[in-house]
Length: 144
Length: 144
DNA sequence: TCCTAAACTAACGTTAACGTAATCTGAAAT
DNA sequence: ATTTCAGATTACGTTAACGTTAGTTTAGGA
Image 1 (cartoon, each protein chain N blue to C red):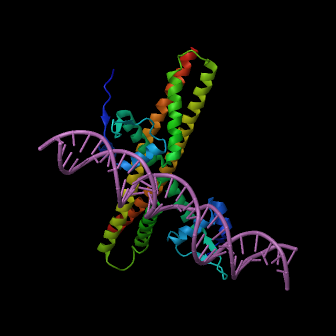
Image 2 (cartoon, protein in one colour; image 1 turned 90 degrees about the vertical axis):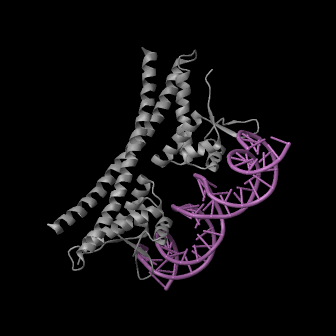
C-alpha cells in the first residue's frame, strides 16, 4: 500500500497561487471529484488533485479556456484513461476500438486547436517584431 | 486627396463577425477613437478602424487579453507611431530617444509575453501528443 | 484544557463584456 | 410621400468566476 500524502487548504493555495474560494468553486462546479475530508470536515488534497489543479490552471492561462471547456477536456482525458486501463480486459473489442478512436479524435481536436493558436501567436509575434525593428532602425539612422 | 471608403454598422458586423452592441461597447470604453458619423448620426467605420477592430479581436482571441490590457497595448503602439512620425522634426532629440526606448521596451515586453505563451503552448501540445501516441500504440498492439 | 489560527458553510456582492428590450430617428427604395 | 428597415440611445439584464462577509466549528500546540 502506497502512502498517500495529503495537503491542507493552505498548503494547496500557497503551492498553486490561488485562494481557497477558487478551490471551493472548482469543487462546486465539478472540476475536482472526490476531495478527501478529515473527520471534522476539513478538506485534504492529494498530490494527484494538486496536479489536476495545476493542469486546470495551465489550460486556463495558456488556452484561455473557460472552466466549462476545461471540464470537457478533462472529461475526454479521463475517458481515454479509462478505456486504456480496461483495454486488456474481457469485453467487446470492436466497441473498445471505437471508444478509443473517439477519445483520440477529441485529443486530436484539442491539438489542432493548440496548433491554430500557436500559428496566430506566431503571426502576431512577427507583427510586433517588425514594429520593434523599425523603431530600432529609426534610432540607428538618427545616430548615424 | 485620397478617397476614404466608409462602412456601415451592418457591413462592419458582417465583416468582423461581431454584433453592433460590441461595436458600441468598444467605442464606449475608448477602444475606438473618432468614429465618423453621417449627418443623421449614423456611424461610419473607416478601413483603418476596421483593421483596428480586427487587431483588437486577434489580441483578445490569441493573447486572451482583457479589453483593458488591449487598451494599454494599443496605446503603446500609438505612442510609438507618434514618436516615429515626429522623429525627424525639430524638438529635443535626447528626449525623443528616451521616448522611443520606452516604447520599444513595452513592445519588447509584449513580445516576451507572447514567447512565454508559445512555450507553454508548446509544452502542453507535447503533453497531449504523448497521450495521443500512447492511445494509438495501444490500438496497434491490440491488433498485432 | 484552552486558545488561536485555520477551515467550514451559506449567502450576498462584484466586475467584465456584452445581451436584450423599448422607443425613437434616419436612410433609401418604391 | 410613404413605408420599411437599419441605426441610435437608454437602461436594465445576464453570465462566469470568483470576492467578501458572517457566523460557526475544527485542529493542534502551549
